Amino acid sequence: MILSGWGNYPRADCRTISGRGQDDLIAQIKAEASLIPRGNGRSYGDAALNRDATLLMLGHDRILAFDPGSGRVTCESGVMLADLLSVFMPRGWFPPVTPGTKLVTVGGMIAADVHGKNHHAAGSFCRYVERLELALADGRVVNCSRKENAEIFAATCGGMGLTGLILSATFSMLPIETGWMRLETVRCSNLNETTRCFEANSNWSYSAAWIDCLGTGEKQGRSIIYLGEHALLEELGAEERANRWALAKQAPKRVPANVPSLTLNRISLLAFNEIYHRYSRAGTSLVGWNKFFYPLDEILEWNRLYGRAGFVQFQCVLPEEASREGLHQLLNAVSRAGMGSFLAVLKLLGTQDTGLISFPMRGYTLAMDFPMRRPTPSLLRELDAIVADYGGRLYLAKDASMRADLFRRGYEGRSGFVEIRRRIGADAKFGSLLSKRLAL
View 1 (cartoon, helix red, strand yellow):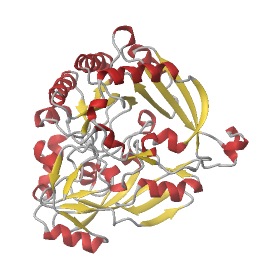
View 2 (cartoon, rainbow, N blue to C red):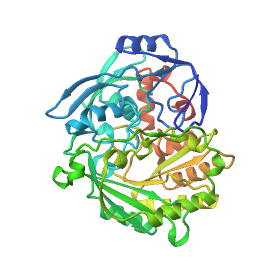
View 3 (cartoon, one colour):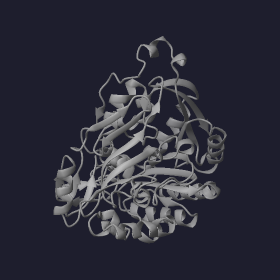
């Protein structure tokens, strides 16, 4: 089967296998010389591609236990975040951390140690994982937590499926009163104003910005910042109270076919950015959870907008002390190349979390999508060099082209991760195109 990540680049001819239940999955591990688990295929690059055997996990999807007093849930790794939301949000529980899509599995969230708009305050997802069951290369199942097999736990959180097969996990949910979000929208004129606004509003639980990555001069880094809090019941009007959990009333739309990538050009991007920034309304409003956290999920298969050749998402984080200058350099490079992104997002991250090779560090993370064209690899190399110069790193869940030397420079936990993989025999069993590219 020809598989790819969400970016539709790269593509690889992979032999797929599947399993449901612990015994079946362990039998698959023992039968294969090399494999990688794959959830819903929402990592963007080559992290869930193995030509020898890619193990499809969506059938391993039972919710095993729930404590309505504490919000603690135990589920199999193939459970979708969307399903957890449909079951528990109307009962007053929300994931403590969520990425920008709900169409991911719990196993994928742990493997990528996903972060969200609240990382500056709440950290990444694995901070809330209390324990997990992991099937090792020889078929043994071990319990992992911060107290039991702690080194394996630290390698598995953010380890991109390279330590073993996550079978189940226990984690805590966040209590909420409604499905509505109190949204504050702020327009910023340039990058310095944008970063000052983030830092002045760090008391908000959620924050993220759309950023104009083609702006130059006084307009460089202009943005729309979105600040959010879970709305209390007393904050709702009559219309919102009638739909307390802000349940969607319309089905998502679908992109019917691949869009010619030439429609995404400098002229169309400049026009879009100007209109978006000029007509975005500042102020306070109430919006539903789906629109606030998962706006792109309202357009199924939106990755087709970048054409048949696919796209890459470049997402980096720069240390806080180097962020402003580094971001200026990144935006300069993108503007010179004329390959800006509709979906450019800036967030403020907090401290690094549990995982040895988890992505976050304290500083700013910038994510930009670029259609795969002839100049794209050259631009990515230029951006990579800037990230290296300023002591940053790239996000493995989004990456499709990083070189091994940049990974070694950016991830100080790499040597410990590689040693744990070797010690438990995972290096000889669990592998992906990403692990080969990065010499893991």
